[in-house]
Image 1 (tube, helix red, strand yellow):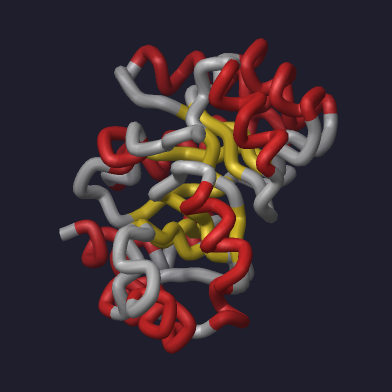
Image 2: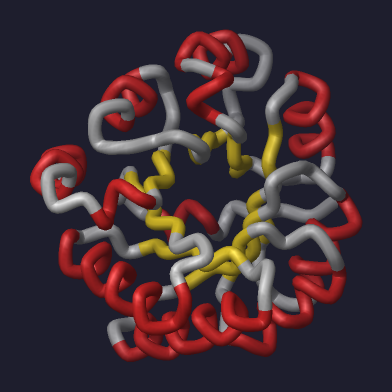
Length: 200
């Protein structure tokens, strides 16, 4: 069994996480800084290209200077786990549930946050000892999905990812989601005050 209860501490009481997908090195650092200054302490940098891995390394270094941690996203292979570890990631995030990736990440000292979208996947993740899971794509699953999952799986802690922004975050948090992951919303000046309200 592989636990990931350390996400209790990683997320703390902050209900938002930032995802910096495919932004390049400089833009990733700039958007991460925007998130940190806003109060969003947890940042995920997906690692799909060599440039992404470099962005993760740079953002992880900047986060460490602030006493914060950065995760590697879209981790779908053992090679991604290795790249994430070498770049300084503190945790990994995957779009789906793969027990092999979860275990490899845990063995490398990084708790894993796998994606789920069905009751079966959620049950398998919980069986693996995980309490935190990423629900993806959250905008398509809808708030009702989270309410329904709460019944049979009250111990599950959900991070809602996919299509989330300042306008939808409060509704999903009210439905029982613990953390909402936002991406492009952080580059929209109009959304920043609303995201700050979510954090208030």
